[in-house]
Length: 328
Image (cartoon, rainbow, N blue to C red; front, side, top):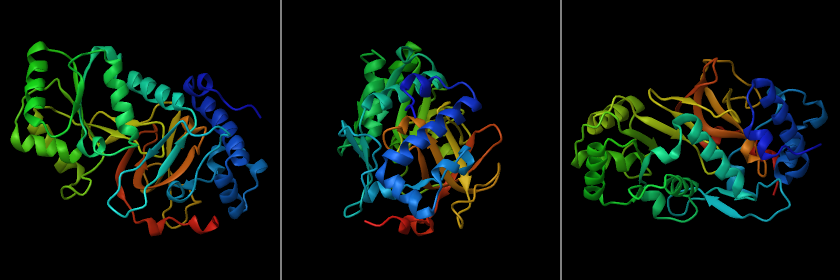
């Protein structure tokens, strides 16, 4: 079986194309990803009998903490790691070809926001900047460079400098994207109030243990008032993925054409749920061709008939069944 290339994956334009490529990727990973192959064997999956994506089992995301999830003979070019508190086991995503990640986030940004060169990118990402191996920092750094704008850049805790830069952007009437980790955006709005309706404020990640968690409506309402905007955008991605979904407001996310969300029953992980029902989020990320494209996350959500989805929270890792199917 031929392995789909970047042109095939990032050229997907229809549901039928997605399904065809996904089945090809599954066939490849079921044979060449030792961790996934063992997981499928533990489930008693007949690989040859899988004829539709609804039949594909999803690998629990926990395996990225305990195993090297790789479908390629190449050594990892980059290893992305998740954030975590001291003593916590973190996920490791071995990326055999970083070009898949670069093409994925550049193309997705273009689909949702247009030409990157039209933007000033301001990145307020303290917790990510303070550690190694963040896929978000890798993406933000590339987007900053791609913007070819000397005003684009990273900010740690220098809020006054960021405030002055945002005011300059407003005076210059330049399209500006402020991407920030949630707790840092809240910290900023407690000191500074801005009325910049054209500003795109994109929150990513959570409180990282720095502040108490807030429900999305309360969080977005606080940020809207702080920045003088009507909507808060969000990015949904994770260490174990090479693709992101984006929300332009109201917590409704949309995937790029090579990524898809389905939900599962939290008590029976092999039972997929229909539209509008709350369940565990399963992700198909075809850019993950060199690791695993079929991942069962710890997030709860629901999917709309048009493929858009909401993230409603997380559930405890003990609810993810199937981890005991892999020995080692």
